Amino acid sequence: MSSSRSRLPGSLPARLALLAVPALALLAGVAACSSGTSGSGSGTASDSHTQSQYEQVVNHVLPSVVQISTSNSTGSGVVYDSKGDIVTNAHVVDGATTVMVREPTGTNEVAATVVGTFPPDDLAVVRVQSNTSGFKPAVWTDSNDVKVGQIVLAMGNPLGLTDSVTQGIVSATGRTVGEGSGSNALITAAIQTSAAINPGNSGGALVNLNDQVIGIPTLAARLPDGGGAAPGIGFAIPSDTVRNIAGQLIKDGKVTKSDRASLGITAEDAETTSGQSAGVAVVSVNPGSAAASAGVQPGDIIVGLNNQQTATLQHLQTAVAQYPPGTKVTIHYTRDGSATVRSGTGTLGTLSG
Image (cartoon, rainbow, N blue to C red):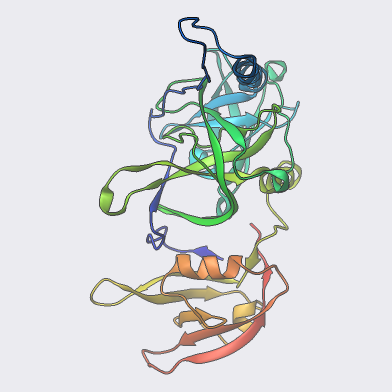
């Protein structure tokens, strides 16, 4: 499902902000635990081991994290393989065909081409054309093994401060969050973390203490009504999703099969004269899709899915994301301004692009 208008109204308790912006990002702070006997100034053996772990992770993983720059924004990326492929967020490259990549833990910049993007999952791959020996592939792990309470480090280039690191824990797993702020991306199975995620961290690495990447930091929650960032609430795309999408982009330049279901429509929010969303306005319907089987036509307003109300496009995307491809669903919609709600069934397809 895609949208002809890039706006997702915030229907979550906190609005979520994209994190690739012109020349922005945050200073990292690796928190070192310390507790000592009175007047000794020395930490315990446990504290020393924890600090050594932090230092080891930073030394091992930071050489796999790069800065990516376009004419409009600056973000981060993670070296994916030894061929010069680097994974980042789709909103970091934002339609560019070539980008500049700063070598890890260095100052030299090299040109890279955009191999492919998959906006629904906000993922992209860029490829460095020369000097690939200077780019160390990261080690990825199964995001299904991530545990709540696990200590993690976020590595990237926030606020233009290269090679920065912040630390926190995994606060939750399995979140479904819409990015908003001009994006129709929807992160499913997102990892929520208390590690600080700031503008410029997008596309970087969320890492465990075993030197493994568990996700790609992508967005942070913001307080309602423009109240600024909500401290300690950030989200990362899980590594399993990253590897699935990146592998297809590298192989084919596009995604032919994802884990995401699709209704097979292009749509946007339907607004009333009061400016409030009144459902999802269908712009186009793919032949043979779930929507087509349900009788949905361009111009119809989808108001529900399986008896869940869908007042906005984000509501509908979230509802669809609950089901795997191949699931039979009931779509509720209105036509020609009538208050009568029609219903039809169809089988969800696979989101691709």
